[in-house]
Length: 381
Image 1: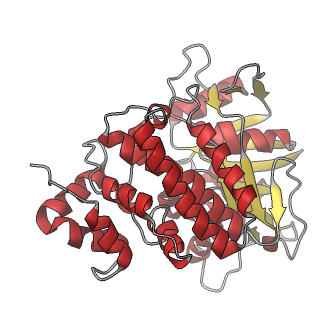
Image 2: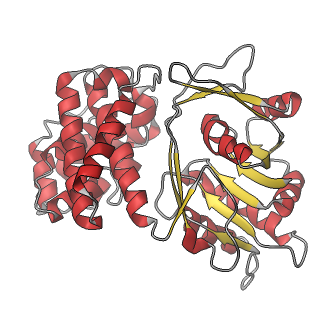
């Protein structure tokens, strides 16, 4: 049986990548820092994936085990024996797991085919980044026996209360998309993954997803937070918020269509499908979860600033996106360290300088001016 090691046994790891690997015929070893989750996986040997849609049938994922991330020897053995290594840990955690992956790759038997390594993160070039980090963890000049392939991933997996009877059960939306760059497999065949799509040019798919799904999610989260919403679908149900979020996706879509020559009608249909997903009340996704890490999400290459700049390049005024960026500056959730830092910067420096610090936009940039025009920020006391 083909073997895969997946870093991250949380809801996304189990409900998305772990499920697709199981359906592709892999035996999956999860690596995680949560001892209770690791023990539950090893004790049960399976878990249940439920779908947030009427009339759907749960899927039981079996042929699994798990190791604790702190058990370096066990992680090394698992990676050394794996045909495929995947991650769903968050971009900032890749540097922490790279040494473990490097150790496992270094321990592979000579002559064995290289492992396929795919970082399934919401980050452009995540596998490239992981590959660099792995090489940095090896002796200078060492070529790891692995191919690193970038991908784009899409499935909404909200925070959820554990099932007391089945603590590993996870609820996900029926829709999912896993698009993998075929260019990563020039030296060996790509793994057989029926739930994934291999493409010759990944960049358009990555940007379409990030600047539609992630952009729309952020739009609803930051606007919803200011309006007192708890859930994304609640924000979507409020006409004023829905209008701005829809406008932002049309602005982003204009930039994406101009940049990647997408079919305009097909992209409009894609936007409608994404908005319908956000309205699903069976996916009670909390606003503060989606809005977390505002400093990262205000980055120049991230889901708000980048599509706004694409819109400007296409000759479209990104007024709705500017409104969302202004709302992001006002995200003051005390439970998010980045939000706390953001509000401290605003108190110390004011909105214009803070916007420049977060986004890299100079004060003479048209997007900077547009955002500030929508920023009646009153720093928190």
